[in-house]
Image (tube, rainbow, N blue to C red; front, top):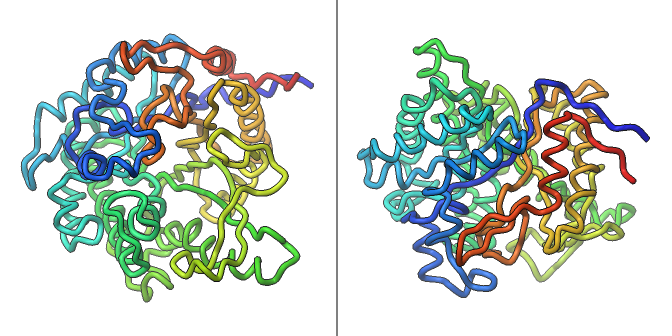
Length: 429
């Protein structure tokens, strides 16, 4: 076995999200956690998080010193627009300096505009389903592009739109805590229109200034496969949720219409052509079987795919699934792909070294097969607030002492740094 070579221009780095690392944010998630502390595993909140808002310069310098050449982060909408129509220039200046710091440390910035959280004023007005959510989101996107756009090429409008709709409106695990299929479909329609409006704003302003902008969502590919492939019942029960979760949003973007069963084919202005690349978040696949006691979940039971090793989160580890996702999405969308998230929850850094090698090896396989993969962003740089999982799931290359905020590199951080430095994926030993 010999090391696998990655292209010289290939982007390698980490991905983060504002609410999970920054601290000091008043948004729908901070209000939700304050009102529902029991909803967070192990307790905890993101009031301080890992204080990245104040420590971003040294944090990014540390990643740059480890040869990362890209970094994905999100702008917090609630900071930039704390009241409807009021844009905080100091907040925009902060994020502009985050971009400059990335550039100063030779890292390509990948900027996400909405990573699960909403300003309280929009959440209280109906959230994603609010009638004016698309135009509000477009105005916020425009403010960000005007402030950051001369330094940013790669934009992500919305992170994992199907995830935020399902967990917040169908399963009730995230704000606003609803368990309604009707509200889930309304949120999905709203998210589709929000993406289209923001993509138009990014493209229009970038073109006006003579800049080149790459625009996408961060699509979460979590393939839902029949638990028993030989069972026609399992195959049938997996088909609808797999389409809704993994294909509906992308196909609607490609066709420019609100496809069924969420809509009736309504044309959305600016939706067709709104993806110039595909951001791909991939962690695992799930096995699906019939559960007559779960009508709210479309009678589907979800569990880890049998026979595969599990992460600390109980997710099946399968690098081949990433390879299959790259192949299928390339064929379906015909777009360059940037892996915007891929990572493993690992309490003791025992799984992560092999996980990195195997998944980057799968990426190298895809590139060798002619698939246009532009980069790989590991989730995440630092152990942080993992939404409903609190601080119980550790995805980071660095651990963080929550009392002192000291960052401590794990052995896998050195492995990833060497991959970034050499552009080579080491052979498994």
